[in-house]
Length: 269
Length: 368
Image (tube, rainbow over all chains, first blue to last red; front, top):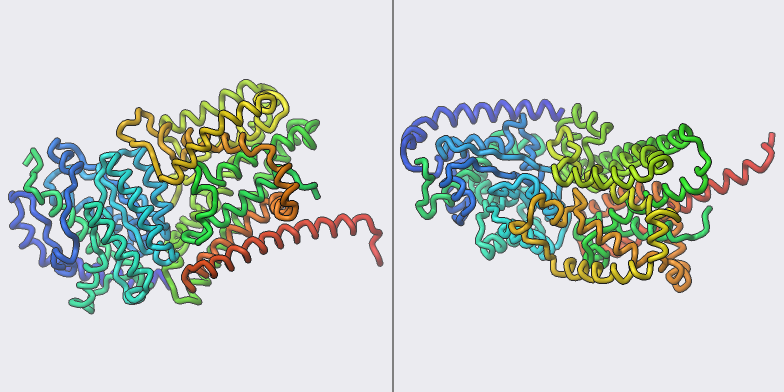
């Protein structure tokens, strides 16, 4: 049954994608040859920039771009990173993000390693981050988190301590970090723990001065303005291909805006 | 049924700690020793597994010819493997049932389970190959691998003990230098507890349990080792309380030697775990005298560690589901923890009761 549902939504997503592609070339063309600006979002995913993230600097990635090096990104988190609900691995948000970033950064080699483990709480991801970082030495860690801590009823203070100490460790390690927050679902919109974890993420990001992609706000904007657009898979909780496309576009938008926030441009451009 | 002893006691202690540590956010987690320590119960559990194997080798299996020893150890590995399969199947069913009953599809994600539902063809192969492990169900797969290689450890120890002393640290060092770990599949990644690194603490447990060699040395010099261990454990308390970890930028390569990595069992964690052992080895006599009933209870759990381990894995998952439904507070968390520990005791008691019943029946002629 699951397969059938997935197939159904796959078709919808394909339709939406086709629609997006039809509308996109015009906005893409304007970009060619221009200095790197935030990549345009496709119509189904388009949300006001203020609903995605407040820009923050990404000094290590900026440095890598200036040196003309490839950008190595570790995408870690739970099912939204793994790509549960996507039709294939290539449709997971890290895979789509890699393509978008390479396009937007005009030829820079971006390598994104996907280390999503579904249903994992931040405390366990933090343990894996340390291990993966020691081995891979990435420029940036994209950490998608929050939902499972809210569902496991991890006290927000405990969650905050875990996330904060990991962020500080990453900073000491001279690695940029981007937090990718919880998604919007009607089901959990009124869950007190869910709201508390969201508040913690906002607080951590502001105090640690790091980039935080507010998926919840971005997805809620889409849900409220384009109610008939289906971003969710058959279980009405995980994202479908289009949902992951929007997620990738939002993260890419936030990153690019942050990268060029001080008009720093890669040396090769 | 064995009389209460030190190894069963600490095993029981490790089992209770693992149960509590495997319920994220539970109030009583703050009282487990990992909060004031660099290492946790996983190290203790694996160390004791090596220790128990040495006791088997020096005791009942002393005169066993090599081929029977291999068979004995491999059948035990198979037994643990089967336990892992059963407990994983039950955990998956528990998550699926909870997801259906509570109309909560996100429960299907918990603990890396999503591939089982989303990519079942590959995931089922991964489950039996141990390349797909549920989070928090990753200690038994490590144990299966260690038991699988146990005959090599045992035979090396019998015939070339020097080689064992050399090979085990060499494999460990190579794993850390080159970052080698077993892969997971179909979910791209590596084992959470790397057997290539963790075999060292297993082998050290095996060696230290012996009356001769480094085990004999440690016994003769126990007083000095205790004094040496004291600052290490004190440092562990400071690190645990301040959440300190070394600034990796200034660490030389290979960094895994200097970080506090759990997957690769970094030397800091290993040394800390051994220091804890040095400090607490022998204290069972005192604990057993002052707290006979609680220590007897932990021994009961430790004697039946495989059964209890399987039970606690499912109980901690059950506890997480209860916390999802009712939220977490001190009272409900106390209920979960007390009930869990009582059920672990019941499982252990039932296993021993069956043994006793079987022994009693074996002595009686069958009635017509």
